[in-house]
Length: 475
Image 1 (cartoon, rainbow, N blue to C red):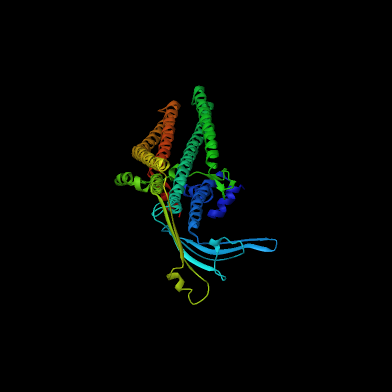
Image 2 (cartoon, rainbow, N blue to C red):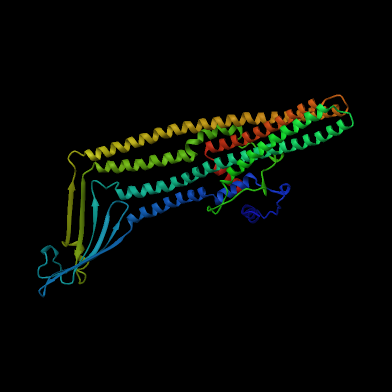
């Protein structure tokens, strides 16, 4: 028993045996369920979203309050030159203002005068406010906003990755179904040709048929054996290609054997996935619902944040700092914050020509234009693909219905020819001709049905809803 059979037994609790007649049918929904739960690409798509979430967490860390501290001491020849102690807490805020509170205590015979503090130390509490560059946007806020956008974009990126995976996998699935059913048609035709050869030989032996009929029946058998073997080779290769999509836990490749088989042609239900009145709605909604188009929107939003940041770069740097000072103990601790105990400062600066800043801003705006043009081109391509697949699906639906009638009519024609043959009014040549036409019609019907299923997939994929559709199917 193969690993794949064991896996299916555990997942679907279906009993089966190794005989091909009782092999388990790998339906479309079961196949998609395996891909959704175990394919490496689906797990990689999950990692894309997880990475974006972790990047968002890292960006939020820029606004974490942090504790700082410092201690410096110098002693030389029994003299304490200086002893500097400082500690505090800084709290960045979303508005660009930074709140700072701390304590310092300094002493020593060679202490820098600006470091002189009371014997029991000095407490400070204040703010740093950007009045120019950084007032409305800074690198820290831009990074966080972009991280939020990328987290949303990663959801759409994951959906698009799985959309593409489903589309590739299901096209291989329906190719597998197609060639297997074609092989079954040829296998049945071989049995018919073999039975006919035995019958003709018996008729020849009793003198009812000429020897040339036995040769014709034998050639017909050989031709069908050749076609059957050729189709079986195609089925084996299609099976190998389909096996590329079957994994266990994203690490163990699985193999399709004779214990599994595709659904039979007679059991395939042709379902209309997209009603005719819905196609116009899909075409309109592509711009706002398709994962690729939404990713373009997120790219533009992120670039516009960069644009705001570059505009801030054109402003002069003008930061004001204010700290109220007080001793850590005594009746005037609180009063000191409101009297004349403080320190404050302002810093100002601006490049004379602003060439770097203007260049950065121009580059960002060109980037936005480039993304918008790419989005317009992608939208047109997706809409035309959707129209193309829908036109194909509509035509193939009519063709499948037409060929189902053709198969029925050829079957009736063959039955009538057989009755005439057994009544002595027809020939083996005509029987073979009718049967060959019926086989060709059956093969064409199978081919058209597979194409119809692929066209349906193409409609869902180009509309960007293939993942959503099959997620509902496998729930």
